[in-house]
Length: 419
Image (cartoon, rainbow, N blue to C red):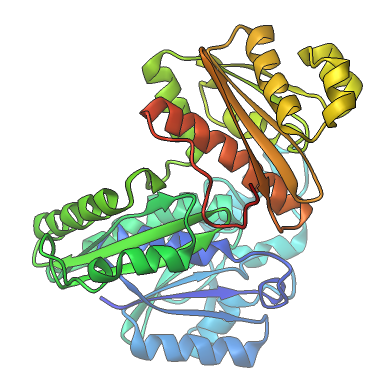
């Protein structure tokens, strides 16, 4: 089964929005062992849309289309798709009534142009939209089945999971099974990972199969590994992936921090909860980003006691107990001050563990404090301000993970460092 993903919209082509729909849809298709063979994006321009629809109908079995289902004059997907295959549009009364009820529920009268969202090509199967005004639809044309969805991500996600995936699963016949996983790494660059995993990427190692593909992707400040395996059955493909992932973890060690949707803050939170440890943070250059990442995880109150954003020297002194003499002698961006900040946060919050960040113009000190030791290191990150903050926060969280696993608090190899 060949799949194609087509996103429509001038805003996508102009780069005004990030086209996250493609990656989401491709990932969801892979859960059904369906590989995406083609990705395409087109403007809200009838000739371009018509060409894309007809090309997709000739070469793909499943085509997922997102965008262009709104009520405005530049929302042309339904109209152009119908015309591309000689289908007339007809009013779907249940969809029109649902639109009216939607507006009544919010105390508004439906604008006349919204009724266009209740028109569909002849022969289409309407797909209800439970969280928006634009229904989707399925339409067979050429060798393909088109599944047309809104471009709004929260609407697309729900409809893909509830409406589209079950239909594709029902249509999919027996055949080769494809399985994939996502391994998250931090601290090593993409080229270094590729070099370290050369034999695994080519399938030429004793523990694994030759029909496994290993992909690499950077999502700053992390790097992702995407092993993909094929087999005659799901069990065979999963077994190949098990061997490949085990070999990768053995080769890379603590550089691999998570799998699937597990971000570093999720992994750190899980470890803190399992170990029964608490954490506090003292931040200067990261401006609360460490605390923000930690508290983005549900249930963080089980292990995160609090944080202090001590940007000014006076705040470092009054809130964290950093001695005035230390600040005067060494400056706010220094090893002694980072150490005092971490130890001050740990004492103030009575936490088992504490982090501290302080930096300026690329230079940063990160500190980690626990009972019996405080570890501090100095880095130079040749990055813009925002990425400097992101990388510093990730280093700090990675140190918590490593400490809880009994691993050394090493310096990441993905940027230059000064001793």
